[in-house]
Amino acid sequence: MTVTVRFAPSPTGRIHIGNARTALFNWLFAMNNKGRFIQRFDDTDIARSKQEYADSILYDLHWLGIFPDVTEYQSHRFEIYDAAVERLKAARVLYACYETPEELDLRRKVRRTRGLPPVYGREALTLTPEQVAEYQSDGRRPHWRFLLPNFTSDPLQPERTEVHWNDLVRGEETVDLASLSDPVLVREDGTYLYTLPSVVDDIEMGVSHVIRGDDHVTNTGVQIAIFKALGAEPPVFGHHNLLTTVSGEGLSKRTGALSIESLREDGIEPMAVASLAVLVGTSENVTAAHDLNELAGHFDPAATSKSASKFDPDELFVLNRTLMHHMSFEEARDRLMVLGISGDKAEPFWMAVRGNLDRLSDAVAWWRILSEGPQEPAEFSGEDRDFLNQAFELLPEEPWNGTVWKDWTGKIREATGRKGKPLFMPLRLALTGRTSGPELSDLLPLMGREGTLARRP
Image 1: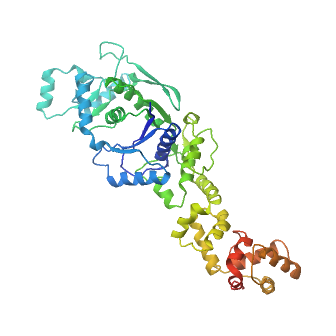
Image 2: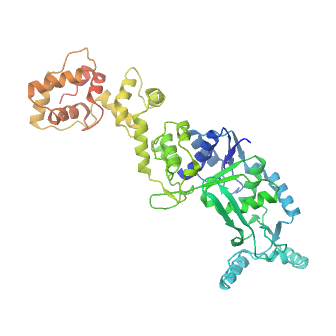
Image 3: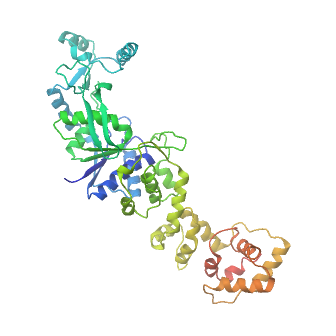
């Protein structure tokens, strides 16, 4: 059997880090099992779904390194769902209901007062042909509910099956269908809710494993029943824990909280996002993987915690710095060129500054310092100014090599008696305008003697 997974967001907004977690779990699982990855847009909600969101989701996935084997749209597949509806009707497990939302709400309240669970009582199954005709003459159009299975031959009896499965993430899981209403699969206007198209597509597309957030656990119990009603073997299910904000709030595509787009615009590397999205809330240490192949080696769905995990953006910057500090010039070259950093000095410059960057774009400020001098020249005391004048008089002649900084500071120490911070800090401020940064022994050869003398205060 070929492992086939799918990522199936609704294109009603831009995906956030929690959605990316689901996509990455599926992608890495497919990688580890030499399987297929289907990108499926659950866009049956025509009013809210937009192509621009679908396009942005694909862009975000590509940025993360996810390239689907195929892309599907549910809005192109209504005929397939219509055929499944007719099969369920013929099997007498999809039935018409005519209640209004107000009537259903009243019935729920009545059941609560009687100490009963507020589930649908299947009253529609007892309607006479005359009652149905009366509803229809009043202009009512039915919505259609799926008849959840039970142990008895009488569908009005409350005893129903428990659904069991071995969850890829959570282990043995059970959903008691007795606690649920028969789900509505088709609205009054003939449009579909999420449940039926998802099952039909998983069958038609040969999905072998469904990996998604644990907010779908109850849905899975219902969907397994629908799989069986359509004569299909359910896939293997896995439900990972959800990510929340640091304050414990849920993430939403509509609010844009921690969207992949915003993280990218903030200069975060894709592998920082992927590493934290996958490893947070698992038994693995959260470290910055160099690429998805390396991350796949750390990925084990069964190692995921059952409780929600808080996503702290500050951890992204820690991972981002790690990636910056180890990024080769070959990896950075093209992006540096876009930022205006090129030429013979580009590679030694990158090797000098990468250990001091939070984001790749931070290199621009150091390139300007190297090319133009300090952007905000430092103020010096009279004593430090005298020291610097004496120091610059001792600047070695060219040609320069990697030892020029050591040679220069050795002469300064001998001539002035200064050492340690009193020696180095005035020089750093004069040369860069900053109190910290890359090793001056790496920067000085890039400045050259003329460029260095130009920084004399």
